[in-house]
Image (cartoon, rainbow, N blue to C red; front, top):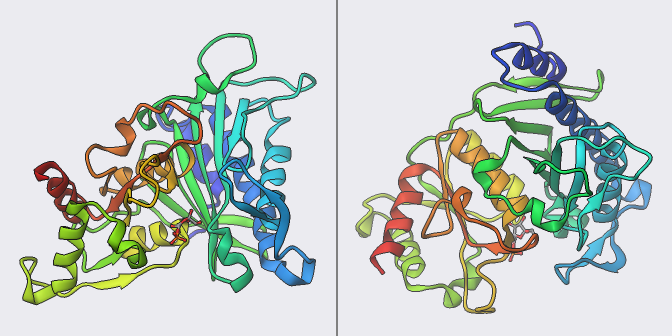
Length: 334
Ligand code: P6P
């Protein structure tokens, strides 16, 4: 089978009934190039002195790892001069980043979690970059936070790069989900997983069980049924995974099915969940729905949520459609 590079795939998508505007193709290629640079740093680890804490904190109140800051800087520097973007937003920055005056401004907004799962870096477990692309509302002034506050349905592209045994870029721009593996010898991403689909049913769930006492009743009920296995109403035994790296969990689900959950819990009632809507929930929900899966906050599709803050959080139930619909139905019955 002839190898199809990311560049060729995107050029052919651009040629096919306008599936991909040229400026969006250029943006995706730029983000992919930045992810190659991040992969290089992540893979060098201690050899490059990039492990450990950065000695700073982010807007989430989390201690930043050196690689969080490095990955954020790589994405900013790679994307600021190309002319595709009006502004960028990152988990690592409180406010949006406007394109500097000396560069042309474009029609898109790029949002990203530059290195998700970074608590895993120092113990050599997979981490990843998550990104989401929106169109910037018309106007010639620099975009404000309000311009980013669009529902996930308005995304024009989303993807992640998982830095694991392989470095893989997984991408959607509304025409299916496609996976590319980094060929380090050639330095290019190669199409290896065309049209990824999530199986409707599964026997594998992912949740941090140590939070069980904090969950709401519908989640208690659902997890109780999963744990009951063949002795309970679901009539089959399940397996459990928890990597503490959302990108790794979602990738596993795209490859073999499963359901990933980070529910709202009582530890901090003011927060509707731990994970962030704009650059974790929305891009992953777009990818999951495009692969035939489902993604809700327990009560509604994540992509339908109208955001009110750039860094707002969201409860997440995503993956194999049958299981997501079941746990969402339990919330509705509560
Ligand atoms: P916990 C990583 O910090 C992250 O944002 C997600 O990638 C991951 O799924 C989750 O948080 C892990 O959270 O509470 O299990 O450490």
